[in-house]
Image (cartoon, rainbow, N blue to C red; front, side):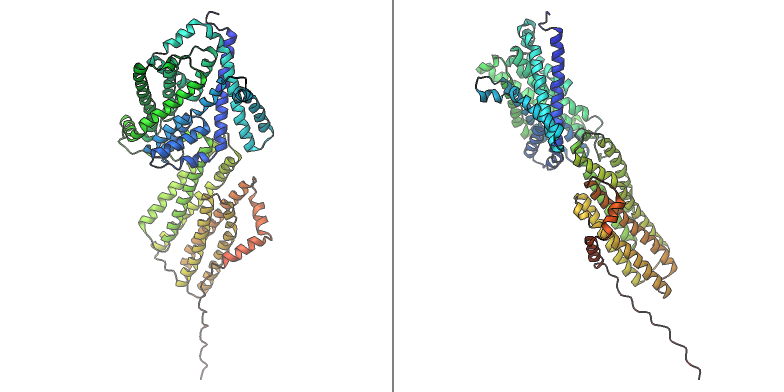
Length: 600
């Protein structure tokens, strides 16, 4: 054909491109899944130091091999209130440097020599072995081994696609029009534009740099003069993903995407201006050389390092520029609890969901403790706060439930699946505990409105029971927030303690009622309080059982409780230990009425 390629070459090129992009996607997602919750841990350690953020952004992107994915995560974190705008600058700069690792791996394909060592350094030699090892691990290994296998397979597919692209475009080496095309790209504006458009379409600077490396290997028509502006443009094009992801987000999340864009645009302008000015003076010899995979990787890395060194001291100015672009709204914006953008990185989304679940548990705990205080002394401000928190817990349950259903359809590790199942089994119990805080509030209102007075003995009994209820709630929330199944195993004995205390409070009240110390009216309110406390303990038990059973990949509450309570020496020991901590004060023995005097 005139263009230098047959229709079959085009077929092979398209197939190679598909395999290259698919391999990169598989490798990146498998790396991310293997890293799992550590990504959340790393990014949650952000400080106000851009340098620290840079190192962390570099580390995360080097792991998942996608600066776009890292930036989208950062946009999601900002939209969820996990990070502030200033913290994102260093992360974005680090992400740009971290994404250059793929280009360095691909640059090894350009190694030439007869030495066995040199030949084995080339990915073309060991990528097939990785593919074989990968399929073996994927088919026969356990979960973590399967993830490693997918990483190997992704890289093998990526390399196969790159080789197919190189073979398909090899005829272009003899096509004059192709050489003229890359000669036109030596125009910096045109080269930057082409690089930006290509990367904007495939939304991966690593992939577009890899394609450029494949063309340089197969055709020999790519000069350094053409490659440099294209590489600059590729860095600009990768910002499209974050800009799209920020649509509909709050103002700081949108500003984060613009920081990414401005960093790459300003970096490109500064770098190219400086380079062409120096080249005009010194006429660098390499500028007219043929580009290869190695020096393309060098330019990609040097560009990101130099622009980072130049712009890192101007982090605050980048933030101000983003704020000017996205000014403050007239009305305050609400922070999103769980950002949809994090669903693209399921391991991070799972950890974020667990953190939100922990926040929900904490709000539930404080609402309950505040509600309990109103039964002793009514306070309008505290009552309003309890109602506000109960509404917040309802909102938490709605948002978390919807998010977890969406998340459950994503590729997840076994551990992440367990986390989701634990949350799905527990958030309703936390919501019910917060409902009982309203029941306590209503009982407190009745005590206030009817001016009911408790006897000292009744107050003493309730104080013992309330201490036990606070204990079981604190144990449950702490175990849940710390993912501590051992601590959760101590909840059921405490639930039995609360049940026994409730029964004893009722018995003691009846005795006082018969002695004329307590009133029937107090008994009605007391019954409401005891019912709420007993049910709160039941929900704590449900949460603990869910944590333990899900961790063991089963869920049969009745079987678990029967096994725990029937003849378990540890259960009995714990019950007796905890029961010994909650004893009622001894009541004075009622004196029998004096006998009537005998008639004289």
